[in-house]
Length: 351
Image 1: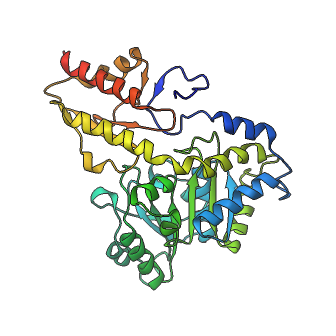
Image 2 (image 1 turned 90 degrees about the horizontal axis):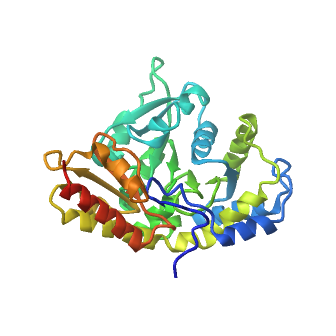
């Protein structure tokens, strides 16, 4: 049965953040029991935080407005001013979060650039600062899984990185915006990933179709520090249970269907790989993202985004001639076929 699109007029491949809440979420929002979350007495927020912590195998959770806020609060709670963290060159906290860790947490990132953006234990070990009065103190490793390039870090690497960090007394934070996608790809429980971390931030509005919010999980002491920081930057909300109600639906229902999005992404990549003039690595399609390039000798891609709009498709402009399309709850196979048909038309009319 075709899903009711709640007013969506275009097929939107720009991201999995563009989803409208489902009717079940809207009903849950309308009927949510609420309190004042700053006072800590919103029952729906409490239920969401407890469920998130249980699902990821942690002691406690904290509902925040976004993944950016979640990462900021987590790094802030783990570190002290003037310390250094190890992270990846293309990680979200470096590229997409306005240097918040420098501006607010006042910590310095020590970035690792590695093939496919993976970080390995030997990378961590060789980039830990020595005990030298001239150098900042390394206290945290901040990782991602799934990565922003759509790849998933295997469990053995997660385990090795965690053990290396612990060998040197470092904390490990995971930007797990799409951790449920990563778990789906690895065919494991999300706890199996989270066990190799001290804290995790994950999004309810990326892939899980909620209209708002992320959750941080970790031990109780860490969460209390993060809660104080949340209030300081204006992140304390009042009757947040209306939004948390959508998050509960996301965790209970949407986490169980992500394989459908992955299958649609794999289908798009497999069909594009058959086309002369398209460069796509099907093996790198591990979650709900497809990256592809046009062969410049066969097609001028500058007008591609506009051509998609005329076919009722929304995609983002290219990044260095590379396009990304993202599948999600509101994308069906027929929508994937429309995208593929449009790309074929572009190649056919390359001038």
